[in-house]
Amino acid sequence: MSRALVRSVPDAVTERLSDLGNIPVAVPVLALAMAYAARRGRVRAALAAGLAMALVPALVVPLKAWTARPGPLEPWAAGYFPSGHTATAFVAYAGAALLVGPYARRRWPAAVALVLTGATAAGLVLRGFHWPLDVVASLLLCTPLVLAVRWSDRDSGRSSSRTPRSRTGPS
Picture 1 (cartoon, rainbow, N blue to C red):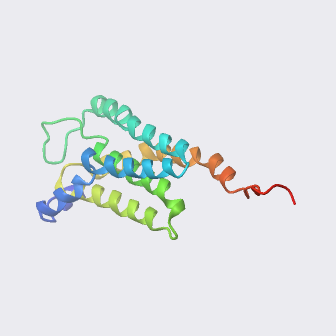
Picture 2 (picture 1 turned 90 degrees about the vertical axis):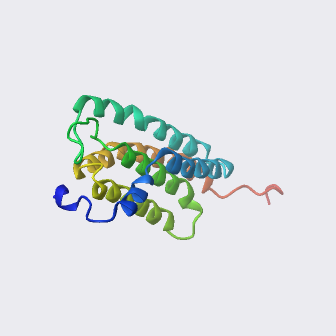
């Protein structure tokens, strides 16, 4: 399947899509969302998102070294499984959506995260940088990191939803 897909879209398009998973592109998006959430009082969630991103290389790099899987277009090279670009995109964009989402009136942050992560994954496969399984493995590998960001905000979300006490005192 992968061989049939590779280079079916012009390289200029697929390279731009795969670049969405580059650290200089994805991490600043997460950093901005972290700053926004922290400023709004959700420091725990912001720190959890930063920690999740810091753990991406700790999960991906050892697996790349252990599997030494060759790429679709470079059978002599190793280290393609799992996809670091997909992992970076998923954690950065999903983390940003979780941090910004509660302030949006609609669910657009989650949709944007899904589109950006999917575009990254598609670009990597269509360009021939990764096999489809490399991309799927990264998504599965990083799902617990994204869920940890979501769970870290549960307690603070409950406390912030309480009705604040009146400043004028009891009536």
